[in-house]
Image (cartoon, rainbow, N blue to C red; front, side, top):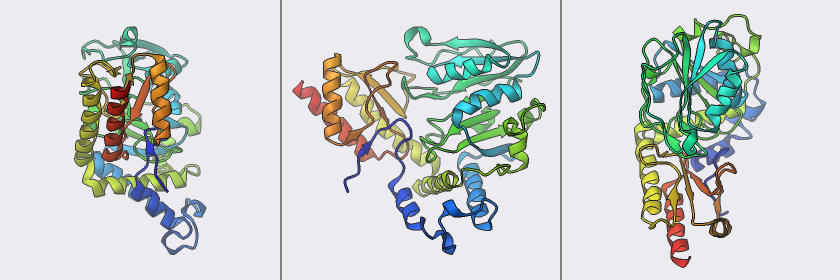
Length: 360
């Protein structure tokens, strides 16, 4: 079977090695005579998967001991509500930096739970850049500052992160976690839906500093209280066991690649190839994101007109390129080049783009 050139924004490409391993273990996991999907989440076989996933994530991201690693459900979208429910306590204001649709959705949910304030936004220029941040500018009683590290629709990404004194920094890293090295100590909380770089959809990772957790609201529904999941090691209710198993395989694959530094180097190579193809096209292709804010995960770009865009997408699909349609809010094209997208796929896309330009 010919594998597609998968540039889907999410759910997205998974490493072929991971898929092959999951296939080999599907019917008989570790000699149990059962699929991992059939195991009790209280069994020792599944417990080994669960603990190894936590251990590998801690190792790959160098997560200190005073941070909790949780496996949750509901995607990043549920986190948009859980965060203010837990941390936006009376008398506090939640600060948000708007860099795209997902940060706006996070703000919309926070508005239902308490006072919010927009510190900065690039909405006036269609979120084509990451705004400059003055770290002394935040609410007097700021509960936290919330950012979205990478913006899948607009193809922008924070190159460096703001460091606030005595104000927790929370980041939605759904679309670039594990794509490059970060200093966990800059953040009080990181969360990410798995379906872009960590594994299949169905599980959400939350990494929370203990000091932030202790500031939380204690009068919450049980399942919406982070403390519930910390105390139960993410086993309060039946977790998405197969998604966590797949996540554990992806983490092992990242280790085999040489860890996050090696993954970051490969991602930079892929992004450079694609952006160079765009920038060297004499204006035929134009990147949506401004230089200095360009994402190495999602490359959004346009062609000269709608007719050529439709022709490009039609021919691309015929040649096996999947997921290149731009988001409906900005149109154009988008190539999501997450960790599992091989360099060869990006190379094939760049070649197709050059041929298409020469013919049109």
